[in-house]
Amino acid sequence: MVKSVWGPPGIPIIGNGFELGRLPTWKLPQWLRKHADVALSEGHNYMKLQLVNKYFLVPLNAEAVKPILDSNTEITKGVDYKFIEPWIGTGLLTSTGTKWKTRRRLLTPTFHFKMLDGYVAIFDRESRRLCKYLEKFDGKEVDLFPIVKNCALDVICESAMGVSVNALETEKNPYVKALLDMGWLLLQWALNPINWFLPFYILSGRSSLYKKVVKELTDFTKNVIAQRKKEFESGNRKKLGNKITFLDLLLEANQENKLSDEDIREEVDTFMFEGHDTTSSGIAWILWSLACHSEIQEKVYEEIKTALDGFDSSTEITVESIKETPYFDSVIKESNRLWAPVPLIQRDLQNDFNTGQYILPAGATILIAPIVIQRNPKVWGENYLDFKPERFDSSKEKDYNPFDYIPFSAGPRNCIGQRFALLEEKVMVMHIVKNYRMKATMGFHENEGQTEIVTKPHKGIRVLLEKR
Image (cartoon, rainbow, N blue to C red; front, side, top):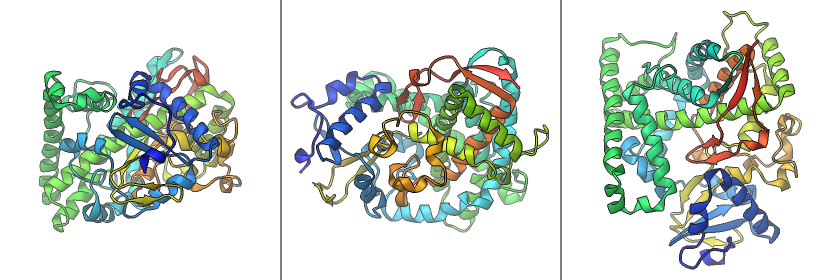
């Protein structure tokens, strides 16, 4: 059944593995798009990729991906996620079946609109600190990506656990270093199939480093949980204004015997994994898009100024003021279309799956690629690589299928924290734009999306920064 699916020509036995293994990660979106266009032109809505004895089936448009994402049974993540289970366990990201459904139902209220108000206070405070930090780069060229990434790490640690790691100003914190090491280890494992051979992985020294990093990360979380639990039980807990942290919400469930201490650790570490790199990547691409399009940047600036009723330094950005920036919403959507924060999503089929065109066998891996679907010229036009926020004017949103735009996935297993992520992106970018002008130091398309665990800017976000 898999063999009948069209795929790019490859080498016998190895398949596409040799070509993909030599391909720089920042060239993968173009490679996938090129072959997707061939498949679609020949009437196929799927294509297959072969890596030695493993086949990946790639849905190419909204019609193909909708049945998979809409399915209530095909929710099992791909085998690549097994690599991080020693760290995040089988929490909401990696669990399946009854456990996933129970956990999803339990955690959904923690991302309710009312709960997000408390997080916005953190976003506002940390974004102000970021803008203060950026003053040293006034009139200079700077790569904003690592700076934004560190600020996002401060945000997620404060939001998830109520702790400050001060990543923005120092990387000496052992927890910060362990997170960076885990990101590197995960990337190396995913991109180099030789690492899947356990004897080699042990001999390379990465196995021992991996165990050390996992222990560092899980021990840190366990210690924070233990301390927070004591404060929680004594009634002496640190609040976020009038709100509480994600961990506190889990501890409330713990008191009701809905979650064990290990369950709580899984979900806090999952929150850390999902909420750090993805959000910082999204923010970076928004900044890049604005830095390359000065007229759009100034239009966003004026809209923010109106929404905040001027720029009094004491004015906080709130959920209500964010609602007054519809054009900025379109800017963010267009940025997330071009550079989906998570470029590839895996699902392992548990049953034979009838697509209408093919019957895909149980055990096959579906590779959902927002970087392909969201760059479909048949949907977004021949100028699909151009940055045009007007694509997302409210009057035009009916022009595309909801499954043509899936930066946070879709269906029952969509990203539970997408509102959290979008609010963080909006608050941080609003603060930067109202304080600084940004001018890119290279052309818009010279900076490609590097397809790793998240879509990273291949050349960073190098801009000339000028204080307003």
